Structure formats: structure tokens, C-alpha cells
Length: 146
Image (cartoon, rainbow, N blue to C red; front, side, top):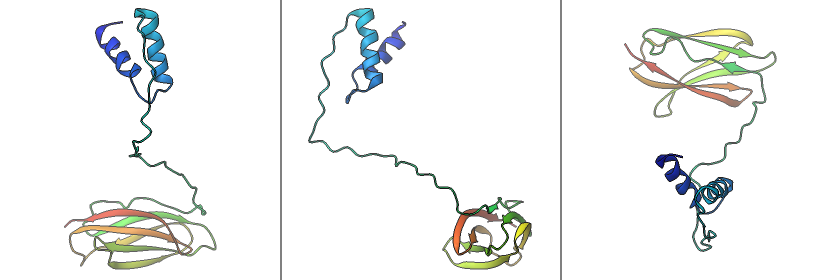
């Protein structure tokens, strides 16, 4: 092992609380150099915080989907492709960055495209939500630039 690999193994071997990586690093260093390690003592009074939340994936209840608008940024009009299953009620709701509703488009079922004309809209960022049967399925962003 070179110096950098040895330093990495030492760093891994002193981690507390110990895990498999720590045990493996300690074993390698013991076999190569005869290094002895004291048992790791966890502090029971210290609180630990998890910085990353566990991600829970849920499948949507519907087969509906929506694509990003094209072109983006938008000059005059933009196109949004979507699919809405039969017997589903769907709409696209456009709002500005302050959450104010700008427009709402009721969608026919099937695989279709919606053309949105942005003439008269201010330059800026807008959000559109894909709502199916009263539930918001997806949020997306569009930029209006003239």
C-alpha cells in the first residue's frame, strides 16, 4: 500500500461508531502492521441529527403523465404534451412565482398537446401544475422571455 492508501485506511479504522468498513480497515492494518485498536465508545449523551431524510417513493395512482413545455424559455407560445386516461378529469393550472393563478386549462382525455399563448404575460418564471381527478400529480416550471 502506498502512503495515501494507508492514511485512508487509518482514517476509516478510527471511525466511531464502528461499522463494517471500520472493522475491515482495522483488520487490514492489523494484518499488515500489527496495529492494535481500542474499542470505540459511543457517547450516549450526545444527540445525533440526520441531515438527509429517507426518501419514500410512491407510485402515482394514475397512469397520467406530462412532459416539460417546449420551447423553454417561451417567447410567444409553448407546447405541453400530456396523457390523460379515459374517464379522468384533468387540467393544467398556471401560476406565477407568488402563487397567483394566471390561467387554467381543462384537458381532454387521451394523448394530446396543449398550446399556451403567453402574449400579454410578464417576463418571468411561471409554474404549471398537472391536476388529475382533483389531485396534483406534478409541478413544472416555465420561463417567459421576450
